[in-house]
Image (cartoon, rainbow over the protein chains, first blue to last red):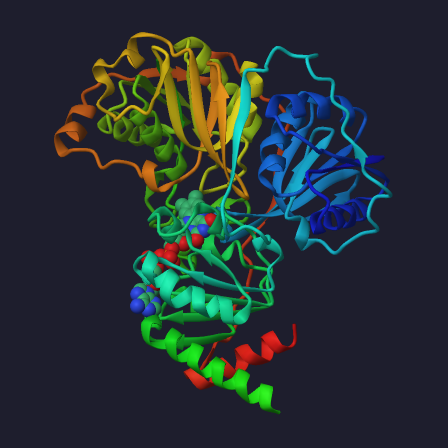
Length: 293
Length: 268
Ligand SMILES: Cc1cc2nc3c(=O)[nH]c(=O)nc-3n(C[C@H](O)[C@H](O)[C@H](O)COP(=O)(O)OP(=O)(O)OC[C@H]3O[C@@H](n4cnc5c(N)ncnc54)[C@H](O)[C@@H]3O)c2cc1C
């Protein structure tokens, strides 16, 4: 049995993938995709590099998600995405994932080989990193005529110097924030005080108040901070799907019946416009206190 | 320019968790009192197509009820609609059925799907469809521009007399969302593009008059047998369960919360 790990970056995701491979057993090698990523060329090269493998594991970044099903198809296998658990049962690969917007869990059994899986890599405990990742060798100009797409511009949004997925503290705002001003004037100063990263619900992103890179949830980032402060966010299952690994969820919401309170460890039922300024003041006082002691 | 938009009808994904039930034996959600809706990303895809301008066909694979998805697409001003009757299945089967229908209905310059569906959320249909058709694929797009007469244009939706309809475009420019921000991808048609949500592709609300007109428009109908798609193995759902996880929330005042936050962050 051979596992191949495909890495688009050498970060914590790599250890998670190695951990998942250990759970499946067999020999493992890793491929690092470096340099100028172009969709069709990378796919062609990966098809060559992955032949003979039984299991191919990718993380949950954009490139992994778009490549995985196509790689499976070209190799005659099957793809399962967004896995949070893997196992081998009677020789078959099984993957646990959320379905119905996080309202249910499914176990999916793969019926073709290879199994090409993209996983929430950070949900897996780390394995011994696969010895060393070999760089993907590419043969530009060869292969299929499907060269008709070209990434011509990459635009990195300002706030992504550190990955949201690796943040320890996250301040997140929802539709109840009411506009970009609330994010700028109330939440960002709080985030600064706590050294936190900013995030948002889809409703706030769709409104154009904050960039789409801030979105957390089923179709956004999957985060795992020690502290996640959800401000004016209802707690729809699709949002919660992105924070199931958060250690401490704090909810600030004006509605005592908001579902977020079913998931939060601590909560305040009140208008965030009242709560957040007071909270900053108290945290400043506490900070000064500690400083004096 | 000819565009086909693949659209799926699903159980309303916004049903609150407390009303959500599953049929564990059949390994799927119970319908209950939930309504059926068009998957939001499919509507984002149709909206994106409408803004690009062109001759648009809405295509669905699903049971009889899925006709509602097509009627709504026509009301939003898709030009034609086609229904493959059947019950769906795993992503490879769906992609094979859609590919077969597209071969009959086409040729198309652009084939759009949603990035994933709000029920199973496998996120594979567009990618597998591209492979079935032997086309390139760009994922997570939220904007499409068309090269016409030597210049890029983002059509304004009033494109019924624009040249975009009459001539196939020489090139297409797609903006797509990534983990870090955006990428711009240039492509030669034909290609598959999967669409995600953004501020500027929120689906339009059809006019009442167009909703009524949409009910009179003819649909092209296929069955899976007519399309000659045989069943294939891919994967099986072997377990489905609702996780039991509720936390007791401790309600605090601002002082109490500040204290807790200070404790948690001090321990980092
Ligand atoms: C297929 C699919 C995928 C999705 N993916 C995602 C995803 O990845 N991420 C995501 O977040 N959503 C996702 N959604 C959307 C999700 O279902 C919800 O619609 C969304 O999360 C709601 O965002 P919200 O809680 O900010 O807004 P709302 O539901 O409008 O909630 C606003 C909240 O703010 C509170 N509030 C209002 N004013 C104040 C105030 N002054 N002070 C305090 N509280 C206040 C209200 O009580 C309410 O609870 C998805 C949906 C679908 C169908």
